[in-house]
Image (cartoon, rainbow, N blue to C red; front, top):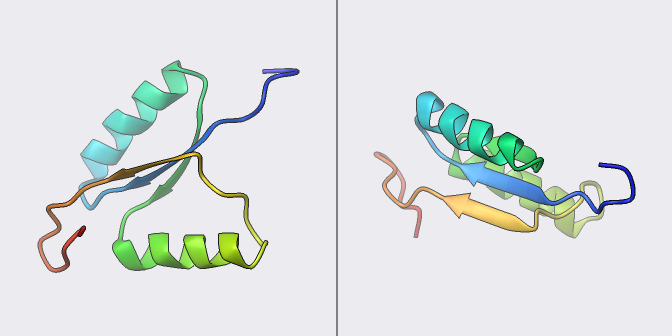
Length: 72
């Protein structure tokens, strides 16, 4: 991907098989995936983004149906 801007995707999902399926699709599209499996882990990553410690994702794929927390 020389001379092409990296397009970063954050997948917030609690089912490992679903994370892998989505990751495979995005990799086929040559997109960098930043996977986090819980809302808390995604929140931590986004806090790192706001403090400048981590680059921001361009796209967030959010599972809204978590068993113990709401994706909303």
